[in-house]
Length: 144
Image (cartoon, rainbow, N blue to C red; front, top):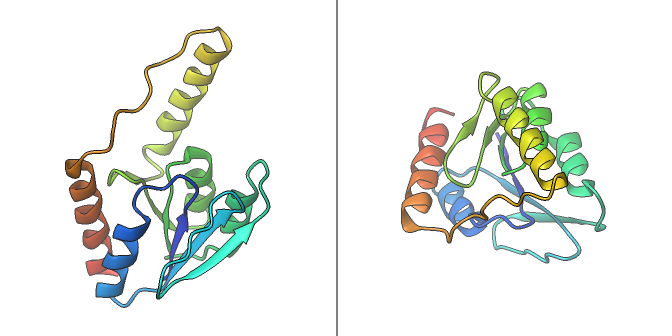
């Protein structure tokens, strides 16, 4: 198993690297040229800025049984199709059972944006979110 991180805007890169090291699981960080992210003990791949360039690079590298860290529902869906496990930055595991509903909600939110209605933005990250993420990550790593 390898952990692949969609690192552009990911708030849990360091937490993931630290936790993966505990379990001797390799980590691959993927980002675009706007985010230079290097961490000891990991490999970083950097791609041109562009619509979904990191997403497609990640999907082309993921294998069944890998773990992907992303907050992008579209990328999560593609990784699930490749039989990877997928976790978001708050500890939610994307599954075949919940991904369709999440994609539908994203679609509805985009329709609202096009209509000029702006939903409330995300609030500041909390310690509880970090704890929930770490617990979910460790649960997955313990059974792998």
